[in-house]
Length: 345
Image 1 (tube, one colour):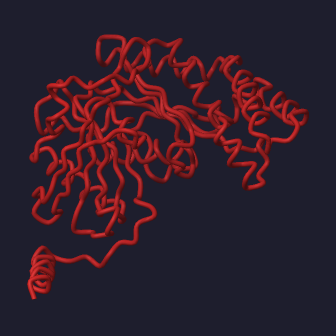
Image 2: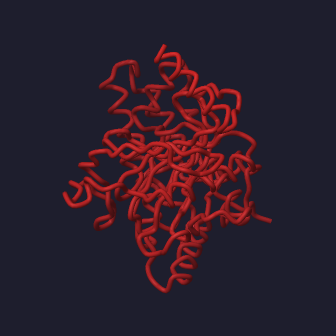
């Protein structure tokens, strides 16, 4: 019996990290607990391994690296990255894998009665935000197959090679990854939500960051975006900051573009207080389920009414934040009053 390499999200859970990568495993877990996750499927880590071995790409990569020279030289490593990616992207996916991927994508299109646009997302066994690549607004079987190879090839992108060299790790042993193929939401806006304040570590407050269009502009940190601080106990917005939001990322053609945000919405908040409260409510449920503060990516569907317009694109444990002891709203109020009295005195 052949090993299974493709899984719909409702077939996997958080225990499938090693099988499909952490991002896909968590999408599967959220699907299984009835969280609002777009329809999609995961391609296993072993499918990537099979592809590299059966196509001969792994052998060609080793040969190239043997002849590459000093990878500490920036120009050398950049050139090697380009050549390795050309090797991978030029190979054909093994026929059985190719057919299953095509079949799953066509099933997705059948559900919607049209050619579905998807995102093709990388999913490492260990979270490395921003290390590998994701491709958005991909339509048609040929494009989906090509973008899967591009995601696979991104384990040899320049930043990954530089990181391996810096840590004295063999570049040819860069770990294989899973791939998620996820239905693309018609995003009015998108962003992230931390279920603990990422600056102060206050577990009683959640922080939302948001921009118009797709969420990549928020994750990249290149745009001045909206920020909301929400009290997790009563789900009220404590404070919000209006960002300039001069740029947004939107679907166009077979991909996405960065464009200037229309002037009439630059000065408007991207989400309502009601939507902010619902996002945090979902975040609290995820925090309780996973047992740790969460960093989740969400999007608002322009085609659906509230509250059914919120979709989850990813969740993972918050890292690099020292979480404070949890306090009630009453305790925080008393502390704030004490600070004010001290300033007056």
